[in-house]
Image (cartoon, rainbow, N blue to C red; front, side, top):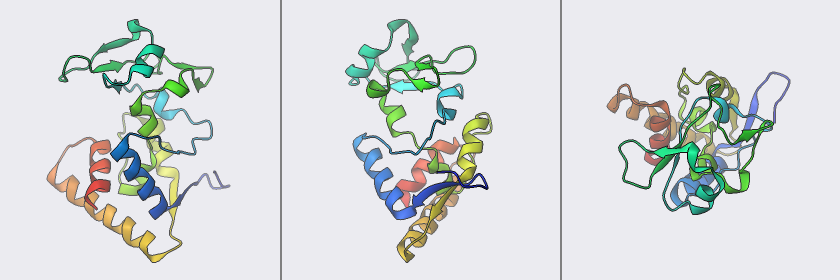
Length: 176
């Protein structure tokens, strides 16, 4: 939800953190209130697809899939078009939404707000969107858990200088 100031309501922090940890543990789907945002679909990102994602693989034309560098045979990536858009994005929506890759199902740009770090500046649409999220703190544990994630992010950044912001943010959720 967007308010008049452009702030996006991310919801109660503890609820989000519990749900995000569950998604990361079991590969379920994040419930991100995108409200028509396609920043992650239009930011020149390669989408990793595991060999066990047979439903996804059946929905994507083979010509759009490439071996994932540095990973075992069977791991693939879906590239992007000349505009930096996912080729499965059609008319502003995912054409394979019910069969989308696990990477897409688990992606949640609120992770950057949770970790108190910026997304990759090379992805300005994601950076702008992530900067607008604001969590709620209806209980003391909400604030304490967010403080723990922020501290973990600072520690991770210190131990992994130059690391990818997404990696730092995800590790901070697991370390808090």
